[in-house]
Length: 282
Image (cartoon, rainbow, N blue to C red; front, side):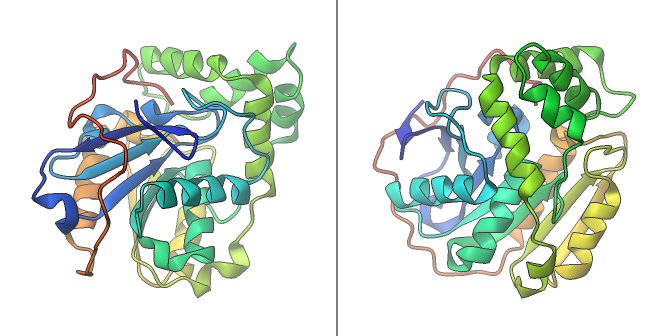
C-alpha cells in the first residue's frame, strides 16, 4: 500500500480517461477500524477513483491515534494536500462520518459531496464502554459491547467474529482515543450552515446511531437524501455491501458537474491491489 502524509491507503483507479472526469472518493473508517472496514464491493466501485485511508494508529498507519474528530479531520486534509486532491467526495462510517462532517463545515471547498453512514450530529459513547476501553484488563469487554451492537440480529456469526478480530488488533489507547473523539463530537448547531450534497445511509436495526440520528441530519442538511436499509445494523456496508455500493454509485453519478482539475497522486500505485484476507470486518 502507498503512503501519503504518514497515512497508508488503498488506491484504485480503473480508467485513465476518468481520472479527471470522475471525482475522487475518500473513504474514512470508524473507531477501531481500518481501510478494510470497506468491503470489496465498495472499495472497487467500477470506474471510480478510490482512496480508502488508515487513520493514524490504525491498520498499517503508524502513530498514536487522536483524541478528537477535529484532529483526525486535519489528518485527512493533510493527506489531500499531499496528493494534490483539491476536492473530493468524503464517505465515512460512524466516527468517519463525523470526520467528514467536520471537514465539510471547516473546509467546504474541499468537499464535493458527503456519504454519511451510521452517522449522527453527535456521537455519545456509553460510560461503561469508555471506562472499559481505557483499561487493558477490560479492553475485550469494551470491544464485545461495541461489536455486538454494530450488527443486526440476523448478521452471520462469522461476520461478527471477523469484526471482533480486527478491533482486538488495535492498541487499547488508540481505540479509547477514538471513543473519546466520538463522545466529544457535537455539530448539531452547525448543520444548517451546510449546503453540500449529502447521501445519508442508516441500517434499520442500528443500535449505535439509531435511525432518528440520520433523520435529524436529513432535516437539517438542505441538500440531502436519506436511505434506511433493512436487515442491517450500524455497520450497514458490511451487512448490505451491494446495496450501499449501488447507492454510492448513483449519488456520485448525480452530483452537480464541476470543473475538477485534481492532479494525479504523486505516489504511483497499481491500478489493482491485492485484496486482504479479511473482507468482512468493521
